[in-house]
Length: 461
Image (cartoon, rainbow, N blue to C red):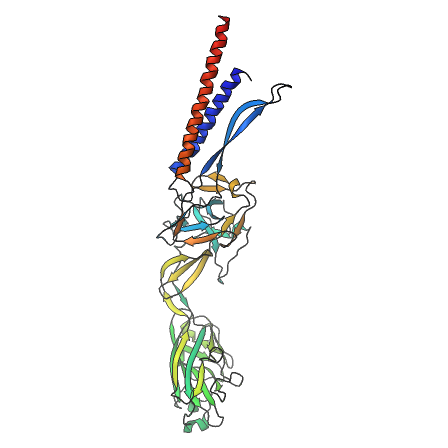
């Protein structure tokens, strides 16, 4: 190896350690950057073939900076509902521009989860990158193809309007008095005739309660449920469900006076409901206002109401014989009635759960899932290439992209939390000392080689 080679090796040492110093400096500068992944400088020796006899000699040193993308940063709590942190190997899928649904996005991948809405309600992080997610379909389901990036769109919480939910389920807990005196009108009771039914008021019910349900627009509708003990069959009660006012519904043949359903409830000898022999329907379908004249036995919302169809499901049997409608020798009473649905409510905020579902919450108690935030995974995340804004781009070295639901395989998602940088300040300062000493040592190579060359030149003199 010549003295000139030693000079070259010394220069390479200076250059490599300068590069390493740059990486350390960048790590220290970004110690408080959300989701930052530190760079490690890996040195490797260079070997050159000089002569057949001396097979190899020193060729100097090279350095390569590696992003330790797979290293987890510390999870820190936050006060914002849209701040998100990942524990595990996944990444947020982000873009530099807003991406509408059905368009292939120019994806980048980031662990910086400090998302907040812009002026239009699109969620973007501190680096200005927009969060991508699966938008809920009209039926409330999600398209979750792990390789279909076209299904992604920019998560927007500014276009969420108020919501109302129509009633679909009604559950009742109550009792009908077993010793109820049979009314004189029971002998001539006919539910399909106004002169002999309870809906018209011609027959006084033995027990009656008014309940409220919600239609598709969040309007409150009053339904009466009236009971009349049967004159001939033991443990049997006639039932009518009718609307107040009667103009709320249009009814087909076989129903009158705003009736939605008629039938009987029958009880076993032990006072429990006999679901086999009871004829009162457990499900009632109400057609939309614009559905035309109802057929025999059918019901629709009044034409003037302009509301959508809905189905009311009745649960009178309780749970395994506990609760529901009973017949015991006690006062007739409706103890509880559970009715779902809700009136119109305004948006009060959004939340994100551990599976990545972003839900809109309304002041009427409704919570609707509107997006699911996927986590992008790669076989070798350290093979990703760094981009501006604490983001990364896919490479062939990183392996194939898969979009997964948050969970064990992709990492868990935490709301109101942020992932800090994975920089260890003590380690960086230690590396700083090592690089400084190595730089000084490389400079000594140059000065020593210079002195030796000077001696060589003086030989001629």
